[in-house]
Length: 93
Image (tube, rainbow, N blue to C red):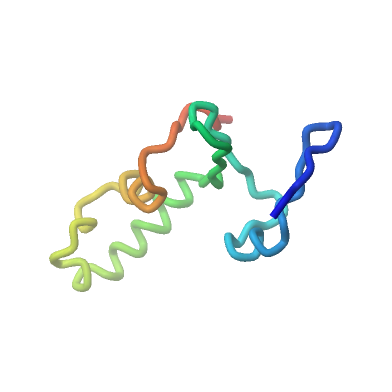
């Protein structure tokens, strides 16, 4: 797929990619300046993520009995799911 950068530096993410990644209007993407290729990740509100994960962990205690995530912080799980630690300083309000 090809996207063209406009004179304002904007691109349109193709609809099929937006649908596959469940990207919605208002979602924020963070670009990794250090990556050797163009890399963007969805910005996740860590407070909402923490609350959601704590609720999930509480409701799945038995299922997580022998799982490595049982005693792991939600930030570590989020980083694990994203494929590594993200720079948390670049998208602070």
